[in-house]
Image (cartoon, rainbow, N blue to C red; front, side, top):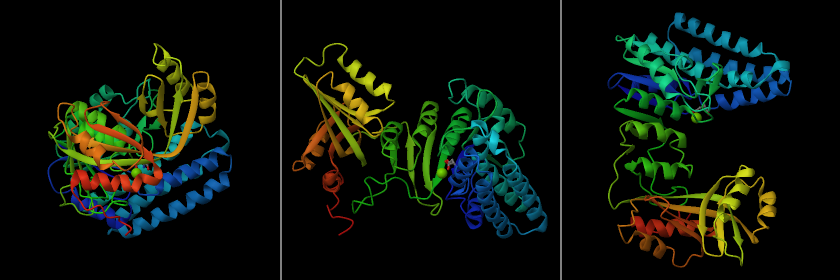
Length: 445
Ligand code: ASP
Ligand code: MG
């Protein structure tokens, strides 16, 4: 058994749905997780916004536009009048329910109901199309087995004990289709796994069933070893360990949602990232193996703020870091990179909403300096401390670039630099040239 997941772009039009339908008929038995058609969830968010503000007419207008789109998709997707009619009746019912919602009693539960409609639409359309093609397919509702516990975390035991019997009850089925993203809360209400959560659904299903492989089908040819928009000559990365993938996911490497990595990793199920538009390309394989002595990729994140606290008192005395962290915690501001010395500490944050309040409170400990428009650059690969030379290579590549922070040793897979954003391009190019041997030419040149 395998799990395949297709994102919104992969099922973004009737043509794409047909393409995916052909693709999933190859290979063995599988569970296919689908996102909503691209743009749909964003539109549903907009609809929910109107409802929440009590503007039913505003919601109604957008619902009608979305409904029109789906009705026209039905015309081009199905060949038979019977399947057109069956799908139209489902779609009309669904939009009727949306139109019928009470704007005056629009609570969080109602909002989650609205957000979940996109996946219900895409999966229904796909199953009807496959049935029209004579495929042995079954639609299984994520709402029957995907559930969160009291801590708002996926309840893997519940998922396993509710999903397995559904699969076992259908030995005749080759392809199971289910919705990504949606689930039920511990109270049994419709809920979701956060935006972009379909990858998470696929990973959870693959993990509880311990499938052979989880395939994430997206619209790019795997991960590149550097940002192709900035650096010329980047190449796809064919293999990553789960740890390396986790480091890169923070940088919005965009191919894999960060939460998705954990369940597959614990279950030891490999994840393969593939390109729907180019199915024969090898993609990127992510598993528990570490390729010794190989540097995999360079990634960067912009618009980072560095907060430095310097004091003449002995800062690293017991409890000092704790008090500093507590201030960030109080303002719900995650810290990413941290470096310390005997007299000071530098931290980076991404979210600056409460920066002023944080800085004011930090002043009780020392002098606070804020540097905005910084960039985190991270080198990911086998950087175990007993392997020598890679840190030197990376720092040597940046010998003429002012480095604001360096962090190494937090994990065995990463060395992180913080540089000014105006030096980002040079930093990425010079690392590319030195680590992967590509010419240091600018993509814009
Ligand atoms: N449709 C949801 C979203 O757009 C979930 C997903 O695509 O993974 O966030
Ligand atoms: Mg998506």
